[in-house]
Length: 592
Image 1: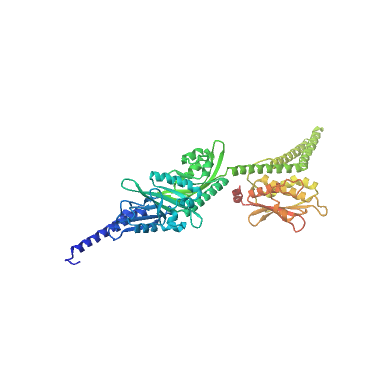
Image 2: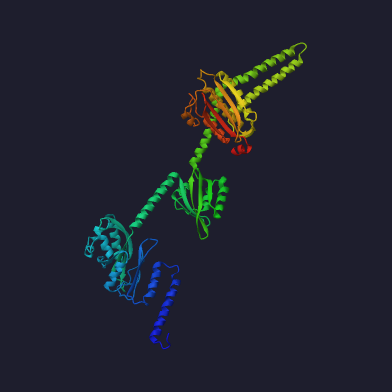
């Protein structure tokens, strides 16, 4: 700068410096402000610096998706104070330019349908957007029946009443309505009315801005439909959803969640309210879940709630969605699984009853064998007692001979007692009990019990029991029940065989994968491929008068021992049924 600079240049330089300082200070004032307010402050700073009559710009509101217009002018007349003050989609501050050219320019710059009305509510001016959408001229829009022709019939009465009341009160208002375009189709608009007042508070004119909100209304309708579908799906599946801030104890529940807990919709739910209805036995687990959630960990939960007329089983999960103010915000879902629990318990009871029925049915079929098993030792008891009595009656008494008969009597009495004990254990209801057992010994006891029945059916039984068979851990009685059921099925499969020996083979063997296998092979008529697929289904039977539950229960018993039961056709006539269970104690104990 030259030292002899003129005063005018110095003044201009000072103005420039002041302008720069003003612009640099603006960002500090913008912090946290709305975009429209930021533009207003920028325009206020720029107008004194630049030779402009007015500044106008438009934004898109990211929340409502509605255009927002902001303008500033250098000079204004008394009648043009403001177009609107950021009301429902139209943010325009300060005044409209006083001359007609600038007014039209601004009206066509704002991305909305703009109307200027007189004090009677009649249209004086419109911008180009109105004429482009409706296909009408300014003269058409000024006709008295204009609104009758373009506003949807379902909206017309409502809009007319709102408009008339607001025009009388000189109060700004907004409404939503459907307006017909030149293509004959209706679209939704948000219409905002704003009065322009003079210094005495009298209405000079009205400014109306109509913003196209068709996309927003469609989105709202889609969201509403999605919400209704979600609510219906939750109701049908008895699944509720929730968003929870455990640290702040704030909970946002879906309608179905309120229904499950039988709280009134809209109740301000707290953890204490939920805890008050949790089943006393489940309180420790519930408290542990809440404590884990307080630390921000994802949680899964199962508990019961006690309601006035019922007890409900609740199962669900919650996952951390985000952090709000240092608090973990959970989103989760829960389900009322009471019906499933009740059905599962009923199914367990039914299975137990069916297993008992199967054992009783087997007992009825083996009545002859039972009688034979008991009659033999009873007959020996009578015979031995008679001989003992005769030897004692001799003169002199034969004490040694009598002692021998007493010993035999004791032996036969124990034999009869063992038979009764085995039968009672096999056919009474009892819980699953683990013990170390020799599968060969268990099979021999079953063979002894079923032998008479097999002989009556002219079945030739052969046994091949492996000598190196390791012990297994299992329920002796249940494994014997499976073996007995397989022997009876094999015997009955050969009832109609007349052209070949009715041979039945029971075999035990050790398998390579630390399993022990027992198989029963018959020489019956065999099974069709369809039968092999359905054999183990409940109530499916190939026998006349059969219940169809024996093999189903047998498979469940073997699976309970972590084994498997299956059937396969023989190379010749008949079929073979096998079950394999682990022989290592650790595996069997884990299965229990």
